[in-house]
Length: 233
Image (cartoon, rainbow, N blue to C red; front, side, top):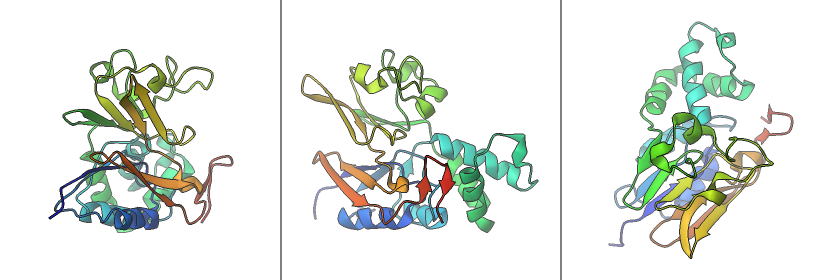
């Protein structure tokens, strides 16, 4: 029997086919291996239902993403149709509609996702951590949305992981614009970003911790146009 592995997968965004294919490439075994997801699992892509089925079958654990949080709120509003009560995007509303009669199942899964999952030498979070205070000084807003610092989404400021020194490795998603990120300090890996924009027509990315190995699956097509903020389906 081969050794067990710890595997992380970046933002899936409902790209179930690519998710299934990358699990096949990894020869993933839910009995032997451990699977962790960076969040934003359902919005914008074509098949949130199939994505959830694969996650459950794989016994995956996921942190909460900013889109996951909004979808959970959207599901709570769905029964009354009062989407206008909050600022839901068209893609978030579409994801809720695609969930059909499984709204309670999705809401339960999303509600079970923590802000962070902490391992012995690593931290998994959707967007990142406060680069100076670390995970202890990271509030929910930073964990779900931070890209740059000190403003959380200012392209003229440095990315948080450019300032982060450790000690624990932070595995994160969220920043498709930044692509695959590998940040090291003195030869030590301190931050690894895995959102490589599968839903935008790029790739889904996995990382095997024990082997320090990247595995990618190319998207079959672009599912969401980020410029025009439009679902392509």
